[in-house]
Length: 379
Ligand SMILES: NC(=O)c1ccc[n+]([C@@H]2O[C@H](COP(=O)([O-])OP(=O)(O)OC[C@H]3O[C@@H](n4cnc5c(N)ncnc54)[C@H](O)[C@@H]3O)[C@@H](O)[C@H]2O)c1
Image 1 (cartoon, rainbow, N blue to C red):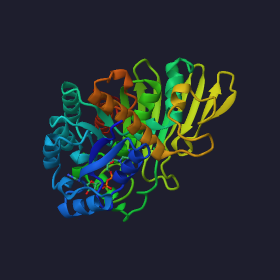
Image 2: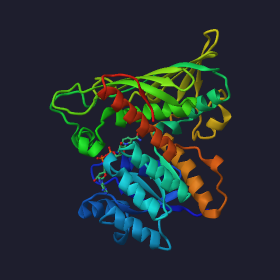
Image 3: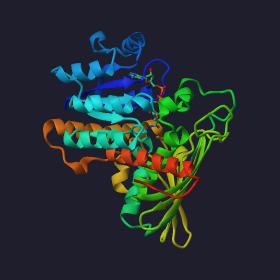
């Protein structure tokens, strides 16, 4: 089986998530990094390229040049990974789609609804694959919850409580370094900070686990730490199509919380409790209140979800394996595209259309917040 070739935009010196993507892809070794525009600075791009053993002639000064040159090479990249700050997701993804190259982009997909619609249209028209790396849907237990609910075992969903608190931007005068600076800068993050960074993860995880579609939201987006202009603590009431309700909280000022995405789903036949920091287990509660804790790797996990596990139970898996699982699914699809065996039912990762839902959610919240915290339809 041919190892696929991929390129990366972003992920230069001192960056956060690019290296995690590289490590996650390396878990299975299905694809090899051969090209990159790792930074806007050509010097820093070459520095990362040298560290990773990338040929100098495939370390590009700009993503435009990279898309053009890689599309023309007989041994060009099969897909690109986009891990730049949010402001550049749209132009970078557009350039690679136009060059006929499959795309994996980190969340949030882009800044505006118009950009999201344009990326969906372009990917669909060109029949290119487009994954948005909402990491948490790669967890075996998250897939277990999705499959369990899809089989009707929880009955009609009544209400959902979901939260994603972090504490890394809690202190006045501490801007969070390189990562905090662009997230809190409206020109870099599109007029939203915490809700774009964390709220889109909540929106996606709940949507993919439950299949519910948001009808309208009522948002209170607060700027808590003095000196900031964008939200760092958000509360959102949610109403789904069909009448179920939800309540989402995202925060970067919750001291003591590292990365605590937590979802509680309440249906007519029982409840499910899940936390990404303890993602090896999921708590299932039956209609009579009986509580069962299911562990990844044991027999109680849905068979389709269990296939994504790599190690026996108790040999702890986590965030990297979840990201690796998303890439495993995506790369299988890219390979099938190249050998003509692809069918849409092979997709088991968040797509550009799921990414667009996140952008619509953000903009409905922004409208709600700007008009006095009233209900706003998701458009
Ligand atoms: N899925 C997740 O769990 C997760 C976690 C963290 C971050 N993210 C997302 O990943 C993206 C990157 O976040 P980060 O924290 O790694 O940011 P970062 O600031 O640490 O890194 C960004 C990198 O992109 C480079 N860059 C910027 N503009 C560029 C351009 N035009 N061309 C080439 N390189 C460019 C920078 O030099 C830097 O190396 C964001 O969209 C963020 O929302 C996702």
